[in-house]
Image (tube, rainbow, N blue to C red):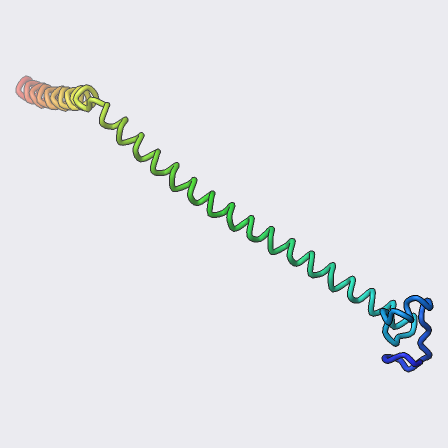
Length: 125
């Protein structure tokens, strides 16, 4: 028998495999090359499936992260609104406004006193 691929003489590995017909009409080199290429194809397929699985897991994790970010921001908004509701702005704002008004009145009085002082010095001088 000759090899179907290269045309060399095809030697069967054993009488048993020859009787079964499990080994096709291939020489040892062509059979080994075919076996190695099939193993490489199988390994590449397994690696590709593993990569696809990892990509799916990463995509699922990104979705979970987005959901967590949304829930965290909604909780933060709820907590901040609850905190704002508990604050009594009258206790905070009224003293600030009173101090500002007092400071502006003091500045106004100081300007008036300075103007009067300038007039008095003009009249005396």
